[in-house]
Image (cartoon, rainbow, N blue to C red; front, side, top):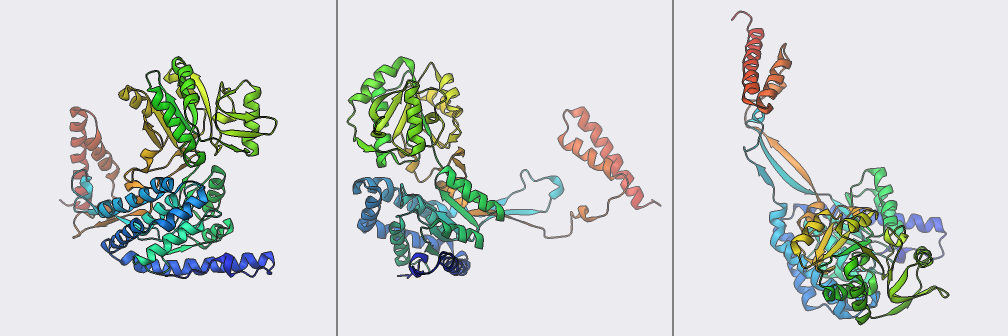
Length: 507
């Protein structure tokens, strides 16, 4: 097994703060240098060889998941069975997806003659996918194994080395993954773990990385992107969500109530695509509220952060009332999950990213009003639409701004390893997972080749009349109507004749 020296274990506690920072920075540089050296050899390895490691890893975790289950369950304070279905199984499926599809996804694409401009006759083009080199993965705390794990997986398959910065308290699952990778045959130093201290990520970006992949809050995203901008480092950022649920008049309300219970209690509500804004057709609002009250809720008591607490106080002062859960105003405690009805249109609850099991229910007249409410929120990660008329629900989904939309379901469709996951607006940009997520771990390289000197007219000096020649060619190739193109052909022939006469004045 690989022995990694972490910055937090290599620093003398008696050192002054500046020394600690400098020592940590030196260790980050050492880890980065080792990863870059290992990556050069790894990228030259065949994709078949890389995928052989992935298959061995998948089989190892499938047969020995106990340590992974215990570590993540301890961090998330949830049942091991929940970890199995939300982290372990989706990760294994992501491995198998890459084993089956990575060769096709990463294969070079040769461009044939179809669609090639006539003036590039004889040129052959191939588009290759190349690894970024060193990828920094900044992991979250809500799913500490699966979310960074898939990004690490895809980065390695694409030929990169990876350094991962765990969220506070979330190092153990990633250490287990690193050790499992090494047991599966991954070369030393390709996958290494930084300190949980945010300064570790800052130090690494300062040394230079090929790509940053962040899952976190919008505020964290701003800070990381600000630093990336200084060195023009590309980044994929999956940030906060404030997901909308559209409940149409024809929705199966029993299904809606069950889905909302599931979405608000899964992982104690700490899921980025959990339901936060519920736009419910006014004709079914009362029936849905009754069904929500009849659900079996796994209630818990917690104290909201200041921003959420202020938003709750303001909403209640403006007339909002709980339809599920209790908001204890005097003690500032919430018995969650909490669903507030009659939330005012301008409430921060409908436009900010509060990462807590709290949702707002808004009565709407129709899809148009629901969309108008939705557009006021700058976050666009996921969404859901409920309605028996699935074609109408699909049409509505096309008008919703979000990276992933489920119809008559919540959250779990995003675990399909074939689909990309990411958002837009303040929810970030770029995607992870799926074919598109794998391609994000590479950049395109185009190679154009010729076999002979024929067709190199563009290298010759410009001659008198060439402007008319080029303009006639453009009109012939792209003009509208046979008459215009026929006149362009005549001008082109005349321009070619002029060019020949300038080249051979005696002929």
